[in-house]
Image (cartoon, one colour):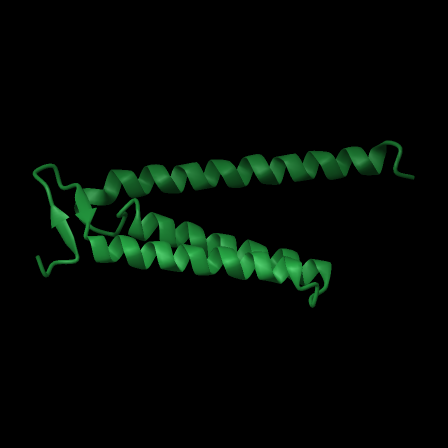
Amino acid sequence: MSNAHIQTAEGESHGTFASYIVGFILAAILTVAAFAAVMMHQLSPVATVAIIAALAAIQVFVHVVFFLHMNGSSSQAWNTVSFLFAIMCLIFFIGGTIFIMHDVAVNMMSR
């Protein structure tokens, strides 16, 4: 039981209790750090948003590694490809929404 993950017949890995605890502690620290960045009012609004975005990206990575057990192994290839496709779709949807909202604001009543 010294392995970091236990392999099942289908190539699915399940983490150990220790890996779940490490993931939970990292996720809790990142959540508290984001909350503190907002509540302390020590940073400019742009810096606060940038820090929250960075902490959110790190937290997504922590969840993917420690709770979804995704890695670069060949047994995880389809999971990784589908995850990257979902991320790409989110970037297009969010970027398109921001572009449309900006274009509407420029062309409508904002001036």
